Amino acid sequence: MQRVVVDPVTRIEGHLRIEAEIENGIIKKAFSSGTMVRGIEIIARDRDPREVWAYVGRVCGVCTSIHSLCSVRSVENALGIVVPPNAERVRSLMQIALTLQDHITHFYQLQGFDWIDVVSALKADPAESAAIAQSMSDWDKNSTGYFKDVQRKLKNFVDAGSLGIFANGYWGNPLYKLPPAVNLIGTAHYLDALEIQKEIVKVQTIFGGKNPHPNYLVGGMACAVDINSPNAINMERLSFVAEIIELGMEFVNKVYLPDVLAIASYYPEWTQYGGGVVNYLSYGDYPTGSYGETSTYKSPRGIVMGRNLNEVAEFDPYDMDGLKEFVYNSWYDYSAGRDKGLHPSVGETRLDYSGPKPPYSWLGGDKPYSWIKTPRYKGAAMETGPLARFAVGLASGRDDYREITDRCLKKLGVTRKALFSTIGRILARAMEATLIASWQKEFYIQLVENIKSGDERMFNGIYWEPESWPESVQGVGLAEAPRGSLAHYVDIRDKKVCNYQMVVPTTWNASPRDANGQLSPFEASLVGTPVINPEVPLEILRTIHSFDPCMACAVHTYDETGEHVHRISVL
Image (cartoon, rainbow, N blue to C red; front, side):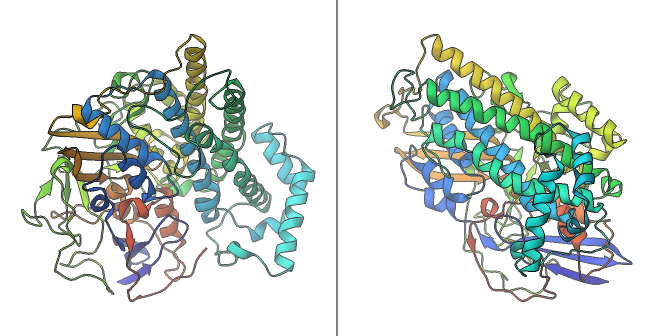
């Protein structure tokens, strides 16, 4: 049996080590290790809970703002604060802007070159690329002249020996199956995505003052509304938001989703690999009423067990026997023992574990191997993220989820079973982008109509002053981050944060085995995958990238020591 080590996995946020044991060309075992140490929760202790959003928002600069949103929700939940409708709509507009930017960035800048051969694009006929692109959508850039210009720029890079970030790719690998004309389309749209993502995220700047890390406020939002004032959210700024929304809708509908469908059609075998665990979790989000009224969520809450799309199980964030985090295979300790699980409301972040830690040369065996904890819900491993949200949406009987899913799968000639795969995970992210882009327009219309009716409130100051707080109170904030379900639990005592715990999407997906040997999504998704050349394990990257890992959220301070069994250089 041969063991392959990919460390670090590139084109992700943060530092991830993957080890895989390969026998007869098939992955038999896989191990996922977060090679940093969690610590943000410790920083939050003893602080004013109204300002913690500013600290936890710095967990990551990629999923910028979602931790801040989750933090203010946790404090509002603890204190019983209901934010005004305008603030809820603004939060949803900002959250969708973040998610759209993140999904587009993931496919084009982080995942796309696992499937697109940039160098092959030099051999393309631009007229053929234009014809294919025009058959996919009527986007106005899909012309022969445009693709010819992109190809010329690419050739200049190659001739000058300055491929830059493209230099270390696996170009020419037989695993790449796209014809040159489609590779040219993908490369051109890679460049377009760089431009479009910076426009989409301007919604965060307009309402939050800046990006990354826009401003939030316990009780609402800090942006004042006055349609006649040049120093507030006025009609000019609102009209600009409308333009950005239309721009985003056009790109995801005419470029992003068509590209994913086109590329997926050349890799049908990848609807058979990468499925991993069979349970899916979504906290739900995007309330049309007040946050916490789950029946109003555009993205529904629930759990799908065993890939049964006919039934949704309940998720209860307060059930002490439901969500638990374990540290059996992590470099942490619990005061009650390392074999125990703790609900996040009483969770611990203890760095006094005295057992074997990195530097390491081998993961697994009987030793802990990650700085990531292991979450479980009633003992079950869960995948979270866009695929999980689609599983819950379909199982909930939602027509919008059903319509786009069935339409896209019909184009690929596959059944819903194909969703539970590497390609299915990528497709779910693109389909979600089209859904939330339309929701963003709905939320914008609701915001404008409410303002025009005379309601300009953005802040609810009730219980803002600490003198009105109970001596001890707990709260939970939930959100659907781009990469999946995010939870912040806060314990407030004597007006300060006594304990703070975050359970983030990549903690669910990238965590190590539990005490029963049950694999988490990353590890489970690799088992059974064929690897043609262990020296060039593109297959491992394809599946791991499909989750869009964010290790900076899962773990938080880098420990750079470590010995490599085999070092792999890759774009």
